[in-house]
Structures are given as C-alpha cells and as structure tokens.
Length: 327
Image (cartoon, rainbow, N blue to C red; front, top):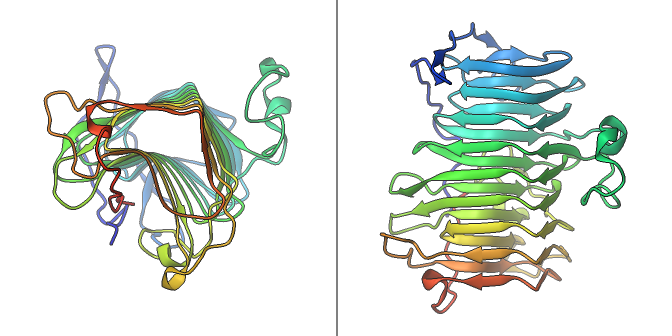
C-alpha cells in the first residue's frame, strides 16, 4: 500500500528571506484547477518569462499554467507554495535555472499532457547540437534543467511528471531531500501513469525515511493498473521507454525504483525502461540504514534493463529486499 502524494495541502504564512531581503508575499488567486478549483496561485499563466523572487507563502502554488498555455520559468527563486512550487497542467513550459523551496508538496509537477511541441533546441538554440536527451526520442519534451529544488521536512517530491502525453527532459538538476524523516517518505524524481521522460545528470540526495513501513526514493518510475489511484492525478497507464542515465544518487533509501504492475499480479506488457551509468550510494552517516535499502529496486516490469551502474555503500550491502516505495 502506498501513501498518497498530496493528501494534505500545507500553507505557510511566514515571509521568506533571500540574500538578506524579505520579499513581500504575493496576492493569491484561485486557479480553477479541475479536481481542486479552490487551489490558489501567486502567478497564473504569466508571460513571457517568470524570473526574480516570488514569495508564495500564502498560496497553494507558486506559479500555475493551465491547459493550452505556454511560457517559461528561468532564473526564478520561488519560496512558499504550500502544495506546489510550479504546476504545469497540460501546458508548454520550461523550468530552468531556478531555485525552488516549498514547505510541503512538490517542487515542480507536469500533468495531463504537458509537453512542448517545438523541439527544445529550437526554443533554446544556445544549447547547440550536443545536448543529451533531445537528439532522439523526446523532441517534444519540456525542459526541467539546472534547477535547485529543496524539500523541507513536509515536502514530498522534488520533480513529478504524470499522465499520457506528458513529456519532460529532467537534466542537470540538484534535488535535495530533508534527510532523516519519520513523517513522510520523500522522493527526489517521480515519473508515473504513462508520462515520458529523459532523466540525466541529476544529483539527488538525502531522501531517507526513518519509519518502519516504507522507504524513500531517489528516482521512482511506476505505473500500471495495479498502481492506479494510489496517488492524485493517476490512472492505469504503464510508464515505459524512460532513460535514467548518468545521475548521481546518494543517501536515498532506494536509489532507483522500477515498478510497473499489472492487475492481479499478472505479467505486464514490455515497459523497456533503461537505467544505465548511474552512481548510486548510501552510507547513511549517523543513521541506521532503512531496512529495505536497495540501490536499484526492480519491483515489477517487463524488459527493463540496468547497465553499468555503480551501486555501493554500507546500506546497499544487504539482501536487496524491495520495500513498498511511497508514492
């Protein structure tokens, strides 16, 4: 049984201070989000680019994009946002070079077919032709690149992508959990319910759960009918053909989790995810290892591959028992 990802909306009323200057809290506006229309945001469908300091302490969301809209977040510092730092709902948005801290919920989330129809290199020609992740399978990916995302003790996940048609490239981000946490099993990066993603060259650290039941994860890939409805915004779709490569994962209970599960524990169709050339370690300094700690947990799937990964550290020297990762 997995815990729900957004079971509680946490609001924080304190002003955030960046570089010694307190940014005034913004005015919150209802988003009309279909499943929770009362959710409020500091900015809704801003154009052309969100930058600078945003204090969303009184709002549920820092920056919200609704279906059919487009834009970008580049060089922003977003604090507050009790449920989400940036929520991209069926829109076309890149999140780049930004610092995001939320008191609860998720740093960046893409839902409901969020994708960018113009190839990433066309929108950002300064990248040139040598940018991994955009040369082949995901030309319509929205970019999540060069961000620093920090989870507080009540935060759940750094970056999330869900639902068919959602396509993201998560490259060169630093995602930092709160460290030993007995209240919530955190996840660094989470892809589920049929979303497509390229996950490369990220640093994901400090997702450690001290409770007895679950384990926190660095990167969680999951889907299938057996997983439908365990978290918000989730259907029965398998998550397949993802590339997880050249990431550095340290001090996470579970480094990478592959979990596509058919109904009734039958054989799932080919999911063909690839986990390659990642550096995965856990020494759990000053803390006993989570009893389920595993470098790569292949819980359920079909045709997924793991190649040339380095898995090491005192917490990964056991039997490899798989925990129920907490979505």
